[in-house]
Length: 433
Image 1 (cartoon, helix red, strand yellow):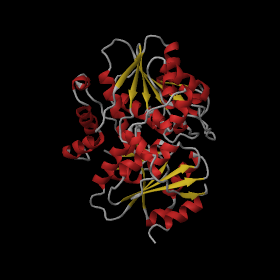
Image 2 (tube, rainbow, N blue to C red; image 1 turned 120 degrees about the horizontal axis):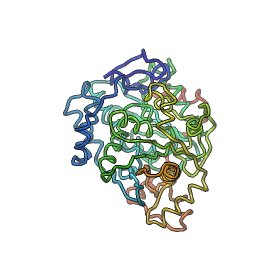
Image 3 (tube, helix red, strand yellow; image 1 turned 90 degrees about the vertical axis):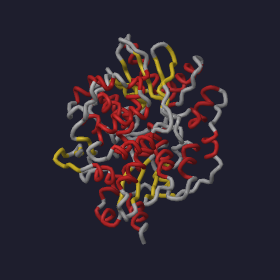
Image 4 (cartoon, rainbow, N blue to C red; image 1 turned 60 degrees about the vertical axis):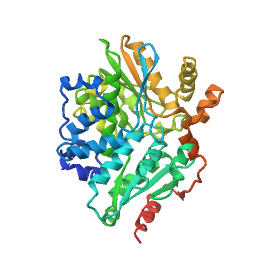
């Protein structure tokens, strides 16, 4: 399959170049030229199929021109080694728990897929690959753990100083081996800008093989569609319309859900739920899309003022803003509302993390205006990853899973750096010297 740049549909590349380069030379994101359709008869069989069996069908439809059946099976088997259970929270409202992977966040799916696919595509390459990652929290931990020990790959993670939870930091700053962490004196958008500038710097790219494992990379983005198919197949049979509420920062997760819909999954509507970084909800409500300086909140993984996957949202509708606005509603919430949601749902016997709380609120608001929908919100991280916020909200301790508490014992090792690109470029230029 060929992939085109969202900035120039005439610029088209194959799977290997799209994955290894990550970002197109014109700064566009890669998109599949053709979105394959899954037959309704096949979709009807998904409730009887396992997560992996569903994965073989979905990934096979997308990548069968480029990968063998054995490679597709190995790729899916490596990715789907943990469950994504659907949990009923209240009548007609379900939580899709995406935190049962090694770092207890939804990005474990994409990170494991990306690392395996890169290793398959780089088997014959003698040149070391540098994976550059900007993170506001969970991306760094998922990518670091997904690529840990992968031969021929070095991961360099940029994160904003003082704006990532201690536990999130420890999940990528204590690993060592082929993982390097850079603590940037700025905000997430500075980290993201520095990474993008590196990809576009001709001098660096002449000497280094640079790629990305953020959701701008199709190998991180596309596999997120898998759990939408799986969740839909596990919902009770109903004649009600289905809505998915997606807590959103860079909007790759929402774009993956829409990709699943465009492949034939009969989801009726989506909700884009954010914190005070409300660029996309305001756009969906009629404003012009305009980036903003990111605002720090208790749901810090969504503290993004310039969402990098916004072009994908438009591309999935052929650039038609009207179609996007018809299919997606947007809502945003401050910290007070987020904390109130955590407290409210705890009384019903369920503990939300701050990001899941935002998704839950978006679902409530949508259903209040559109009664009769059955709703799913994405619970993107274990509440223990944000235990300071959750424990303060609930006035009670959150028990950490053992694999989380182990990270806290590690020693943090970082390279401090300013937010100017020059310093980062000098660091990268010295890697091979």
